[in-house]
Length: 397
Image 1 (cartoon, rainbow, N blue to C red):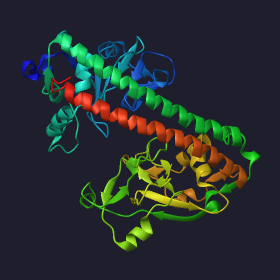
Image 2 (image 1 turned 180 degrees about the vertical axis):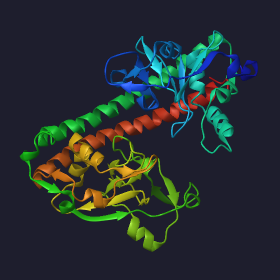
Image 3 (image 1 turned 135 degrees about the horizontal axis):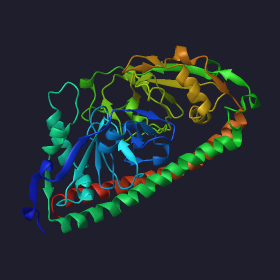
């Protein structure tokens, strides 16, 4: 079937309903329905085991029930417009008010529509609808006006099946990477124990006693970085929630020779995100090399003395003990929180003997080599998926 035989219809003509979620409080007590929030959606998936329950009345819960085939959208914030197809969920599940639920009708395949919500066409329409708005967001009116290319239902299902299979391959590769991340944590526990429970096992030093140098990054306004500039410029969004540094996700900027000398990253540099939201401030990552990179002023570059191996410190900062210490040091307003070096100087860090730290670094280096191989494979799968997706919605699949 060619694209010329497809219809283009507003989403409003394809749906049974477009609804807002329930305004309520979450609780860790297993009372009431499960309560899906924006923060529970990570990397296009939900771990239902850790989703909290909802403190809400029976009527609200009834009107905000989720079922297989529903599509939920983030209404506002950093994830505005991102969506999730509910492929399975606990029987008794509702969704929060910062999400919108789209329930398509009999003329549309939910998987096909959901795949459309990942395309450049969709994001262009969302961006157009958000222009001139002080706080970008989506609402029921915005969603209903979206123009959806729509082949007959059997073709929708065929296309959805092809894209689902390609997405499943990507998901397996991401799962393999997650398992390797868990392996690094397991290696840390094997060599150093649980630092939260066994603080007396190793000497504990304030962070400042193992730090040789700290430096905040290069200040650049939004008009001074972009793809047209020559030098890679690492900002806080290049550090993932789990402490990975994604050098493929960096902007570029200009710099003088003196600035390059002062702000270039060297292998082993530890990056600490000093300013961000309350949830994300304090993200960390280790720079392992990869050519010339400068870093932004919302990041602090830390270099250590001979008492500490950077690989060990990077792993220690992911432990529950250090994360607790970081939470105690956060301060800020509703939107912006900070942790600066003056707050970090006293952070207590168990410091094992340097030979043991280096043994840990050697093992982690082997794991990182495996992760690099998986990342390369995932990059190829991402490119394949993008090509399939492009062809699918052009009627060429």
